[in-house]
Length: 408
Image (cartoon, rainbow, N blue to C red; front, side, top):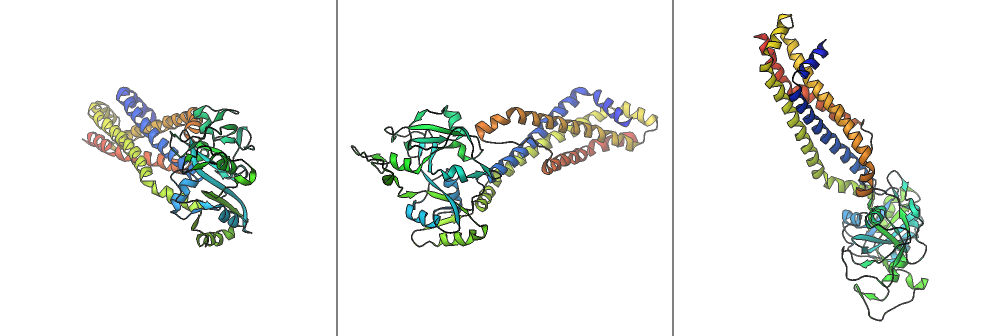
């Protein structure tokens, strides 16, 4: 009877109740959506690389090394000689290495020179390997493998030819037009910088720069492409997988004190955490905005209930006449607020699930953001609990007003 009375009371004021309900639904949707995206973005960020024990580059800051070697952002302070790379790769504790050579681009997307070990050993997420959606890894000198975002945005398919450019600008006047590449494979989406990268062999990087000096092609220069001639002189960085995790800190110290040149080895997981902490201000700002939107909606709910008290004097008088105590009237106001809030939470969750279902593939393909449809996480359950408690708190003022009317 108490619940039916609360619902009947809300139906009698359906216009203002509907507007308040919609405001709370939208605000809860924004809050839960921001939190869901924040959690998934953080998870994707921390899972950019997996199973890599060390990243080695020229001596610089930890975050700078991570940014240019993994996220393809910024520039290396220096390169690593091929001899130093081979010396460290030959360490008995090293199981595999992935060399990385950067410096070229194609229509704003980075080109990365590497070896076939990249496709065999690179991992992301929860130790997930790279998978080709189409084609195969590069096997010929002028073949390349595209990340999913590059192929989608530029419309490339297997067999298409394209020209790489010297430098990292979206527009370049130093292009390797005499040595076009053919698309041999396209990777599945990973939600990582791999999707925005063109992958070629280290030998191809050497070949396209044969006869170039300081970013400019020397007129009339055209060198052969014997395998011996294409051994790189230097690389930008390399990733290391160890046979035993126990050797991680020993090898890191050995690299950081390397005598032949100034090198630095970082733990990718630790550095990723440091980088995310630097972004915490933006993260907290989004959460604050969402919380303020919700607070505004709840205050609107309280204002609507408070404004209705004067109109409901006759209703309150009838309840008092049939023996309802003032506390019953107070509880009725609380129940009405709770029903509106619970209804808003339910509809907001249904909307969020629908949006994730409909737009999930678009977010993954266009923005490399993989959103999990699972909403019953401890964090989101906590937020819904906070919303319910906040609803009860803000409805105390109209409840007290109704209580006083009933007492008088």
